[in-house]
Amino acid sequence: MRDLFHGELVRITAEEPEARAKSEVRWQRDTEFHRLADGDAAQITSEKKIKEWFEKQAEQGFKPERYPFSVRTLDEDKYIGFFGLWVDLIHSVAWVGIGIGERDFWGKGYGTDMMKLCLQYAFTELCVQRVSLGLHEYNPRALRSYEKCGFRLEGRTRKDIRREGRRTDTLWMGILREEWEALQK
Amino acid sequence: MNDVFTGKLVRLSAFDPEEMSKAFTRWNLNSEYVRLLSSSAQPMQSAKSAAKWMEKEIEEMSPANYFFSIRTLAEDKLIGGLGLDVVNWPGRDAFVGLGIGETDYWSKGYGTDVMNVLLRFAFTEINLRRVTLTVFEYNPRAVRSYEKAGFRHEGHLRNYLNREGRRWNELYMGILREEWIELNNHAPSAAEDGG
Amino acid sequence: MFDIQTQLFEGPDIRFGPIDHEKDPEIESKWTHDSEFMRLMEVNPARPMSAAMVKKQYEKLEKQVEENKNLYYFTIRAKADDRLMGKALIQWIEWTNGNGFLQLGIGAAEDRRKGYGSQALRMLLRFAFAELNLFRVSAIVPEYNEGAIALLKKFGFVQEVCRRQSLERDGRRWDLLVFGLLNDEWRNQA
Image (tube, rainbow over all chains, first blue to last red; front, side, top):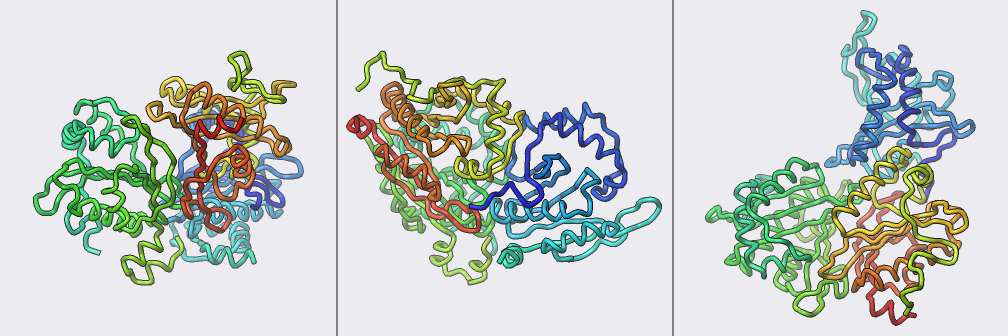
């Protein structure tokens, strides 16, 4: 069977709460990263609190509807980001959230490699029938990356985000299992 | 689809710990019933203790666990209980457990009817791919009932049980979605989507 | 039959040992980052675990061993340097029926195919049959785990159940098999 955890540039890991908190606290303060990745208002949380949150996660263990992963580069083993899958178990569909906190790794194909690993996991291990995601219209780099992975633009919710006084749309994309399988051939 | 929970003789209804725990303790006085249902000896539980346990189960419910009361359509009588537990989501496989505590309702088609309702729920509502069950060799009535509902034999664990000084096999039975669809002559669209 | 003095927990190259809460979590965390290992050991979706999560899992395990009294868990350790190599367990024990389900795994790919699995299974079976006095043991294995199937058959396990297409992985469906071995059958092999 194929290796689920290794791509061409990155690999999937489970980081220790301390390591995650150390990186998260930096990424959280990077406004540009935050605004690309998230819809909620920027927050500042202490490293201690973040670490506690991750420790609590470790305590609770795995849930069948949620799959959070950390990502490291293959060549230098650097912890650069994350992706997570939320699964609707009854309907067998998943939502993905993905982010590269280390800005040095933007625009170099790492995101696309991460998404490819994510889709492989979703379709061959979770065996869902489709994967969905949302992104900000002001994030064209992400849009291009997702299109490369096979996502299709399915719609947009108009002017539902307001930042720096401007209103922007949220774009919604999806990829079906048969579309992904066809791409693998 | 009018009511996925109603069959020809029975309907599945909400699991109410207070009502169920009382019925439960009464049914468990019948050792034949207990031995048909459980592989290991259970202590006799008070209704109070059973209710508490049931309430906890309900609280911890997830999309993987379902339990129902079984009531007759004719008299709305509570006759048993049913549980469904998804054991593997990617494979969409679940275990079903069924017990009819009211012995007057044995051998009259109630078990098969319950199972038919359950399978329809499992395959068309939870979108499962297969349903699995275990049944003891000394329970031929249940085995026949499950065969009627479409379950196929998948083997048995040899000499799994030790009761009354001898050993008995534990049978495994399973039904795949495709098999159930064929049995029930459902429209092709139900079979199309792989998920 | 072995005599009382023959060690239950010692093999030629490996031994059974308790969990080392300090050293083991990091090692087991590494195994979980190997999707091949996870797919052999687990029917649930394979995912890596941090050492923190493994530690929590060990705590839950020991609690279960103590409270439920239907689980025996051993770590498999190299005799040479006591390093953690795998795990061996008997679970879901029903005392009135004398049954249990066993599971074992060697964590690192470079440690597999060296006969340690055989050594561990031999010890686990002796423990099950000559110490726990179980009447039979079962093992659940996906049909793609050819290594485990070969090992079980070598020890006389018989395939008893085939849960058809119970799993889906890597784009296809797989059967889940259940193997069984009776105490008499084990005894007659020696």
